[in-house]
Amino acid sequence: MPAPSSAASPLVDLAVIGLLAAWLLQAMLCAWFALLVRRRSGAGPPAPTPLGSWPQAEVVLCLRGVDPALEHTLAALAAQRYPGEWRLQVVVDRRDDPAWAVVAELLLRLEVEGCTPWRAAQIRALAADPRAGSRKCAALHQAFGQLDARTEVVALVDADAVVPPDWLRQLVLACQRPGVGAGGGNRWYAPTVRTGPAMVRAIWNAGALVLMTVLTIPWGGSLAIRRPLIEASGWRQCLRRSLCEDTALAQPLWRHGWRFWFEPALLVVDRDASVDLRGLVRWITRQLLMARMHHPAWPLVLGHGLGTALLQLAVVALALVELGRGNTATAVGLLAALGLYELGCGLLLLAIQRVVAGAIPLPGRIPALVWWMWLPLAQLVYGVAALRALLARRVEWSGVTYQLSGAGVVPLGPEASHV
Image (cartoon, rainbow, N blue to C red; front, side, top):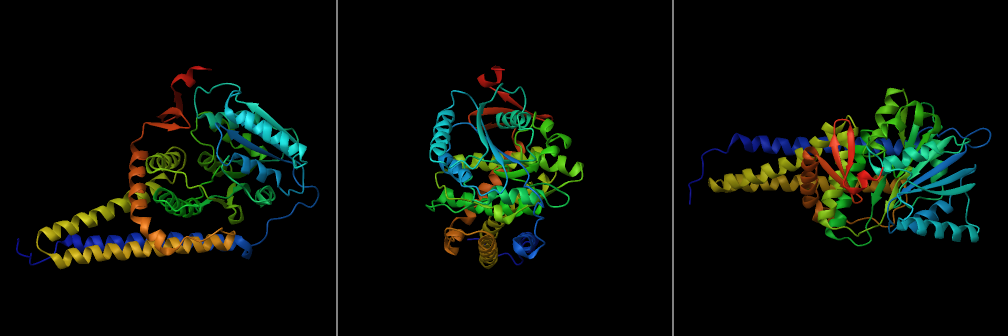
């Protein structure tokens, strides 16, 4: 057994300082997030209500395959309490896509039951496979070219976003704020079954919610934009080569002097727990890749994900080195510091959950022990996904592989040739 070293490595102090600095940075981000949410949850000035008739709106839903929540999503749209007229436009990837029959049947049933608050509903297929950009962006580009002439506000919703009854009303109000060109919410995962992968996704998403709010990164699952800005900002043109629509919206808005407004009341609770770890890593990688390709804050996102994971691995490695040198007390001290860091991160997750619960009703709060149990794995997955996103040259999304380039993405495989 080696004799204990007379002095601990200078790296020990640096590691402890790094853990403290990392936690303080995350705490400041969480405090900023809490301040924004609380200011916009009733304390700040309300959005101006239209003096005359409400703006005519159009909701666009793009589908590829049948999401398990699709029926609930359409039912939620049918329950909207919007004071003005609005229309529903559904763009399905192909005419023979299973989603087409499902949507047609659901819309017919809702119409028979008299549950159709929209002025009109249309189902269209993607007219042509794109040569560049993702299939979803191509579907949106097509939908924007087929909007009703009277539409003033366009809202986007994802197939797995079960929105509240005042969703469209809140979106339109957000867009009515002075200087605001687009507004939206985000998602919060509260899985019905708290499996490991489901909790890893919930933990990662809680941190992503903070970053997206602070760094002004929109989420396309619950998003609205003033109709004239779709063309004027250059966003529609940008969709021709983009992987995603939401992250790619921020820069066109900023360049033309408009802001994005995050509305806490539009947070959507997702209770899905059907996710495996391998698929989750790919999903998080794709979310981060969208920031890499389309948002100027990508270096900050990368530093948050990769930096914190590498710091924790470095502390564990350093503790093992000190243990090998016979410095048991130093090694234990390092691991204790890491444990305190994890404890602090768990407290931040509880704080984020409390802030969210103050903005929207939650079906149930996740206990502290469950957060802490899966936190280390979530941090490791985050780091791996961040590295994968940094190095990625191709990405798979809904069965289609895309080649990444400086100009955007290009579809690969058989579907790329059906133009």
